[in-house]
Amino acid sequence: MNMPESALREERVEGFLASSIVTDDGVRLAVYDRPAADPDAPTLFLVNGLGGNLITWRHQIARLGPHYRIVTWDYRGLYDSALTPAQKSAGVALDIPRHARDAVTILEHFGVERAVFVGWSMGVQLNFELAQVVPERIAGLIQIAGSFGRSLSTTWFGKPGERFILPVMGLFKHVVSNGGRLIDKAIETGLLIGAARRLGIVASSIDVGLTRELVASYVHLDFDVYNTILGTLGDHDAEATLPHLEVPVLVLAGDRDPMTPAWLSKKMAAEIPDAELVIVPGGSHYVPIEYPARVNEVLTDWLHRKLGHDVG
Image (cartoon, rainbow, N blue to C red; front, side, top):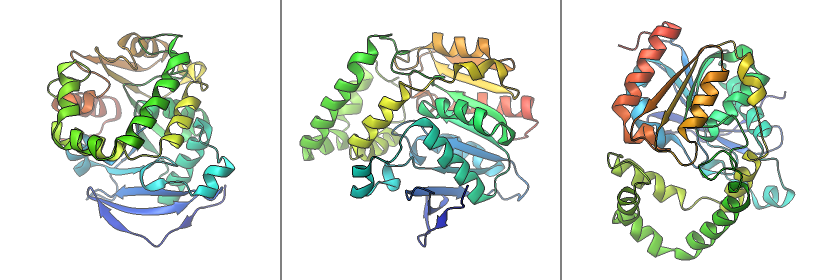
């Protein structure tokens, strides 16, 4: 694989050195690196959910950052890895294998030989793909609120989800693209988040300030790209990989997650030889920002017991 071209831009974002690289097919990716105080510290490779970014990991970074180097990126086409109009017109690849190639390129760029891969939602699916592509780079997997694949048919809605989730997201794209200031106002005032809490979509303990920041940036994504990526998740399936994983795996989920239900996490953990399962009562798809203290406790305990990492 050709090494990517490094860009000139470097700045600090959420305590990370942010820069960009250009992939072998010309897409500029925003990449983030936060070295640890100890140059020999192990590396955490954060693999986002679809629509997630550095903000979503803030609680975990605060707890684990002093003990690990942390590397991550914005997926192609999202946030600061936006596609050019020409790239969109040309239909650059946006499927899981292409994101996996991006991930390997980033690891090579930062000289990361081996890491603990921490995935959330789409990141879980991508981690299982990476376990097939570069198993030698994976010291362990932390899989949060995600699926092994076919994720449009493994929600609470089952197989019918394949038929209506993408049309619903098409309608959502129309709403956010035409809502303008009304959407921004609903976010600023907490109306949207308050409604989600009252309806039980998210736990009442969710970090409201962090969620407001995330949603404010999320609604301005390119939803043509977002929905294309979402569609590819329904076509990808890495279940056959699960019985052959040879690294420790932590599967963590909430018991009130409609997108990746607890039964799915139980199924994954049962099929992986060295897997531990933790279900957080009351947690939804956003359990790391609903119950950050509990999630961090689980992570630090598992990292110590399974990988010998002392995180205090």
